[in-house]
Image (cartoon, rainbow over the protein chains, first blue to last red):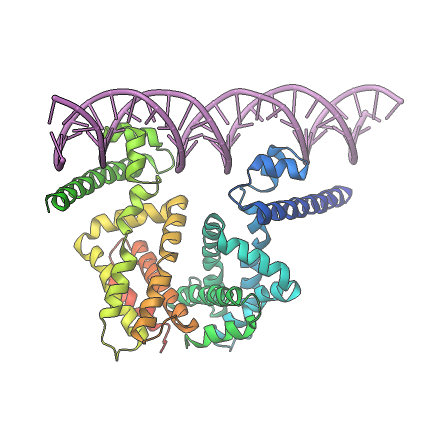
Length: 196
Length: 196
DNA sequence: TCGTATGTGAAACTGAGTGTCACGCTAACC
DNA sequence: GGTTAGCGTGACACTCAGTTTCACATACGA
């Protein structure tokens, strides 16, 4: 088991370095603007080589958006954990609490990150792309709940719409500088599409 | 008025060249794969310089996605043209007929383009980004219909959801190799979110 | 006929991302 | 204890997208 344990400590160390690099990058991006900062700047600021930086984050955008990795799995798991009788729209709404949690834990940091992403076209696009890749996992989780193999068209639509609700709610939350209640906004968004 | 007329003929010529370049690019992309083809390849194939190619299309992706330019304005206009009493969800559904039209006019070409876009991550991402930028226009058109200045949260959500319906319907249409009826798929998608 | 607009080509430049190789450290093995 | 294998890192060269600049050429208006 020493092998496994060793690997584990290495992974923990890697995660720590990754978090550190992300932190440094975020500060720099906020101060100078995402586009003004080059990979060389990031590497220099973090005290590593460009190569190393790119090994931790495949792209510049991922230094910011890496925080969202795994959200799809978490939400899909939450979805599967919902009671079987619950209608899909409600189950989706509840599953998104998993994501919202992050905004409760660190509202200020989340606000800044969200603002940086929305204000930077490149980041916004990448985030969109990443979120788009969540949809299959969500639709399939819905299908699984229903005991089906493949998601129906309706399930795919609902999964996509749920993510839109999240985005629109976040937009409004951001526009209010975090003053409005994100949960209330998300509830309102979900209510505006009265899906079965 | 000669000045205006001259400008007009120039614009027409430009549009023709643009269409020609797009055609050449599309063939090359389909044959070799989007990522294998460089800007130099495109320029050489089209018989122009790299500079010129990039003057017609700001990016490589736009050589394919430029066809979708202006869709937001067209759909928003269609939305505003719907009867005032019509509920928003129905109006959105009808406004999307503007987009669907293209798929009726040239089903085979549309199928190939759609497939190329879906199969190429870079194109898919760009398309997503472009479509995302349509949302404000759609929400504002909804707001305008309601006599309001700014769109409500519900209107933003509906606009986004409508585009998702389009995307999901297109996905299923593509998966069926164009055999299923796109209009029926879109209707089904809209029906699965029974919004007011 | 003489500018002047505009479209094009050539070329240099920046910056992101990839691939390769060599070095150094640490941990297992003899 | 010395050796070796594996892994993280840095250095470097490379490809390619996209920007910018400049020169030329053509065509149109004064």
